Amino acid sequence: MDPSLLVEHLDTLIDTCQQGADGNSRCAGQAQSLALQWLLTQRSKCWHKAAAELHALREQYAGTATVRAGEPHASWAPAKGMLAGFSDLALLAVCDRGEDAALQRYREFLDEDLPIVLRAVAQRHSDAVRDHRAQLRSARILLNTAQRPDAPACPENHSVGEPS
Image (cartoon, rainbow, N blue to C red; front, side, top):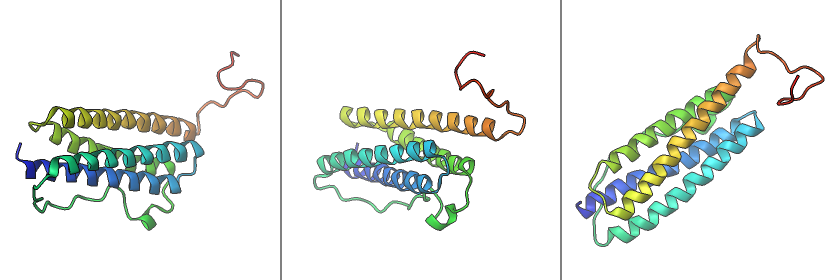
């Protein structure tokens, strides 16, 4: 692969990771559920780590490559003030859309003829995004179930997971 094109793709993924870190952090700051706050904060940290890893690889592969001006990518999450008042379900939807866009960018990168090291890193990051999307969907199911008016409540004498 042409080194300048490789650097351009890496820049796109670094931008994607930075948007993911920022978007998850902003959503975590608006979440009502402590569990959702924790999940999104952890994911923000993962995105930061991925960006740092890609940045180190970019420096390794950049050499004398010049980067072509790419198209700006749509922001991962709405502006900070726009998230105020979002329900946890709405925040999950924002995060899911952002993760879906990130997964698409990783798929496009993985379709390229890449050095083995870059392919391995991108595949690991892509797998993490896929796993996180599954966690978000599980969280959405739990929130939907908890918010249903006809959802059965736990009997007073039993905690969750205890036999009746």
